[in-house]
Structures are given as C-alpha cells and as structure tokens.
Length: 73
Length: 145
Image (cartoon, rainbow over all chains, first blue to last red; front, side):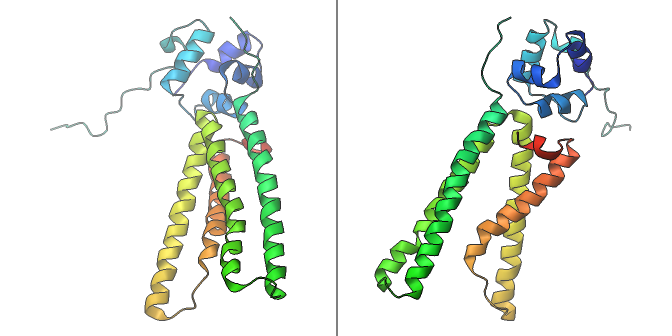
C-alpha cells in the first residue's frame, strides 16, 4: 500500500527513529511502512493519522481494485 | 502533542531477553558440565541422576519462555517476522522428525536423541529469520535492536 509517511516525516524533519519513538514502534517498522513492505494494523494507522493530524485516507492510498477472480461470463 | 519518554519497545524487549538468555545459558552449561563430571565419577546414585538430569532442561524452558515473552513485547511488524520464522522452525523440525521417525520404524536407521529437537528448531528458526528479515528490508543488527 502506497503512503505519504515519508513526506510527512520529512516535512517535520524527523528521522525514522524519532517517528518510531513517537509511535512506540521500531525504526525498522517505520522503514517497512514507508517502503510499502508492510501495511500497518488499523490501530497503528489511526495512531499515525492522529500524530500527523490527518485522516487515514490522507496518508494511506487505497490500492487499485483488482479484477482477478471476477466472473466475466 | 505529548511526547512519551518511554524507551523504544523493541529495544526494551531485546534487553529484557538478553538479561534472561545469558544467565539461563550460563547456568545450563554449568549444570551440564557438573552433571557430566558427577556421572563420570559415579558420585550420584541412579535415582538421583534421573532428577538431576532435569536441571539443565529447566534453564532451556526458561529460555523458551523468555523468547516467547520477547516476541510478545515486539512491535507488530517485528512480531510478524518472528512468528513467521517460528512457524518455519516448527514446520522444519516436525518434517525432519517425521521423516527420520519413519526411517527409524521402517528402514532401521539409527535412532537420533530426542534432545536434538530444540537445537534443531532454533537452527531452522534462525536461518528462516535471517532470510525473512532480509526480504522484509531489515538489515544487520537492526533486526534485533
């Protein structure tokens, strides 16, 4: 899932470690979210949204709808 | 917004784990050496040897419980990586135990001591964790601290 976490963090001049401290998670977790390797849980997504005073949709981009498995008949 | 001054949970979990792991392993080694010496010198009677043999296992149980607590204290992403590695470790050791067990039953291969299950699990788990962490972009000691 794409997100704007890196941009929002850079705007505040925070390192990944600083953001991790603020969210009570590790630097590795921040890195994994920023690079799209890990999608945070709903509680963590809310925590991120609250910290940046944005809505979840403002930070996390909804992935495009997949057509796989749809009945084309 | 209030800034919490608590230490990073992952680092805290790692410290707590090491505080338990190092003494548990030291006591395990000391107890193994002590029991081996006593066994060689025939200083312990047979019934007592049964009881004393369990002592090193107590430290292994403490270590396993410490590892469970460590995983429980990690944040959600690192916890996911650990759980994946544990699943690989469990699956790997069960597959090996099943294959070897069948070979013992059906093909008369020599019996392996059951003792090797824990080190075998930790070996597979460790290898799996290195690969899983690397694939998830977690590098070096950063994976643990």
